[in-house]
Structures are given as structure tokens and as C-alpha cells.
Length: 155
Image (cartoon, rainbow, N blue to C red; front, top):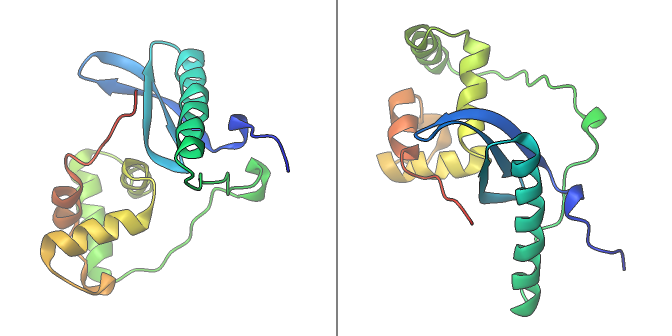
């Protein structure tokens, strides 16, 4: 059995504007409810490591299975995500990106960064608009209203 290593998890740290000003925010892909805020990059990263380790202990104490680091090394991914979508969704995304004053690529990246998994966004949208097919989800306004207020922080 290999020794537990919190550094193997997918941790992202980026500077964000919060109600308290500019802060670094660390998130863990495998633990979507984790968000650690810090004044420095290192503080946020170390906070994420400590949170992963603490969460692992809690899971172990309650005999629950802890998520494993599922994503390989960074060089396994190109950073490209070519997708096809409906013309109506494409149009909605382009119009919203223009309203925000950013490129379509930057806007889609922002949407993807808001939630750790597309699946959770789709489930929230489907619940919010009462649809059962992901193909029916075409309005960006529905995505935004369904995802408002869904952030969680573990201290």
C-alpha cells in the first residue's frame, strides 16, 4: 500500500477578486467543496494540502472511502478542448461573451472554472429548469441562475 500524499491531488491556485479584495484561492479538483483563501500563493496552496490531509483523516475515522487523485501529470493534457454544440448555444455564448467584453474562449474558460465538473452544472441546470435531457439546455441564463450561490468553503 502506498503512503498518502496530498500533493498528488489536483490543486489549482489563482488570484481572484473577492469581497475582501484580491486573494489567492486554492481549489482541489477531486474535492469540489474545498476553497482555501490566502493573501499569498503559498499560503493558499499549503492550506489546500492541510485541508486534504485533514479531510483524509476524517474519512478514515468514519471508514469512508476517500477520493483518489485521478488526474495524471500536467503533460498528459494539451489544454485544448475542441467541442461541437448547437448553433443556438453557440450564439448565446458568443453574445454573453461580448456583453462581458471577453473572447468566447475566455468566457467558456470562466464558466468551466466556476464549477469543478460539467456534470454538476448540468444536474443543477436540469433541476432548475425541469428538463431531463442535457441537449435541451441551451440558454446561458439558465446556467447562471442555476449555479448562483453554489460555492462552498471548508475551513
